[in-house]
Length: 284
Image 1 (tube, rainbow, N blue to C red):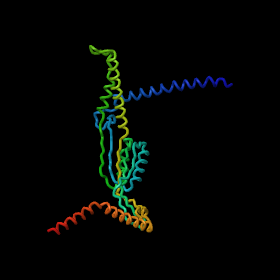
Image 2 (image 1 turned 45 degrees about the vertical axis):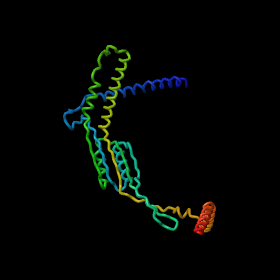
Image 3 (image 1 turned 180 degrees about the vertical axis):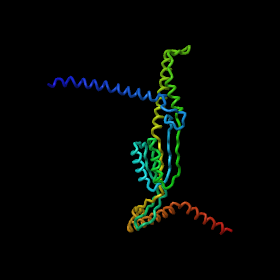
Image 4 (image 1 turned 90 degrees about the horizontal axis):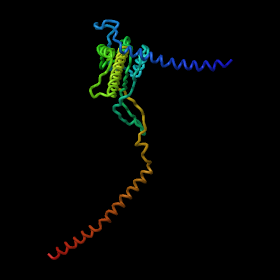
């Protein structure tokens, strides 16, 4: 009764392996066809025609009451409209640091800082205005706000027409052309066509998903903490300081004695000069 199972398993495995690449090839061909398509469903002569390839971007820099809360609200808003958070970073820009006395053995350290955040968001075009409104409603001061609408229709059409143009039946190399030159030429043409397809796919992606760049900051804040006074901690005890002072005085006295002792040649010269001066003075 178990023997048919041994025959069914390999058949299923072969069927799965054969179906995978073919479906991938069909999907790849469909994508390439979309990138090369010059069929527009509406008249592109109208400025607001849905067939136009318009890329929308937004850039806002503003101050909020709380950077962390604003970032959380923005991330939830983007995910709520099926967008993507391409980048989200938060950091503190440090300012002045000052230590002031607090107690006999401690200091109060005051660190000024400014919380900041940078977001790069990918949002469906239909939801861009609502997400921008969500941010501006939280802002207490808008430093800059830029909205751009770039029409990429002609670039998309140029790439599609270049790829849709029929290839020449034969390629006639130059007088000194070789088979390698022909192969190189074909590879270059294929690479150029592929680059145009990729560029068109990128345009389509930007058309459907707007890029929203956000810079957030808030008013300067102070981080206050009590720390140990290093001068108090590293200072030696009273008895140790007395012994250190006695040792230092002894060293100074010994060094002075050695210095004077090392000057004995000069003392002899001074004594000899003094006696010589006395003799000359007596003769006169």
